[in-house]
Amino acid sequence: DVEHIDLYYIHRHDGKTPVEDSIGELNRFKEEGLIGAIGVSNFELPELEVAVKTAQIDALQSQYNLLQRDVEAQILPFCVQHNISFIPWGPLAYGLLGGRYARDFTLPEGDWRVRTGLFEKTVYPRSLDIVDALKAIAAAKDVAVAHVALQWLLSRPAVTSVICGAKQSTQVTQN
Image (tube, rainbow, N blue to C red):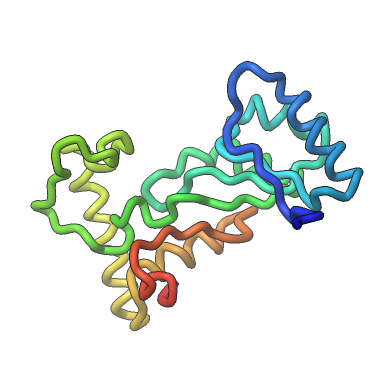
């Protein structure tokens, strides 16, 4: 019984369907009043460039946090230039920026987080150095480490909201 969707995302470009076809169809939905805004998720710059030539893109959802900042060089400036709300996913870097992990932590065999690159032997210690600095800032402000990481994101150009995952209801309340 839903007649209107506020924000409709294309989650990931399939690499086959022309971007202009997908975005064009969403634009038709918008013109018909079925959706209010067009969003894309995990689009790279070339796909995004085609998308904005087809219709107004209202939101881009991509990975971004203090440890994974690839979008800063090109994507965020593009979003600012084209008035696209940037909504980061993975803002706490799989718990790292929440201060959950100790230096001796290792991922269990077959854990999906190995694909993130953040837990590699050369990367993990550097990430924890950043977390230690965040802990000092958080302690000085009497807030949780996660709050510092989230507030940093919300202060970035184009970032209008943050998608926080949580495994416990207390994490939802805190965030």
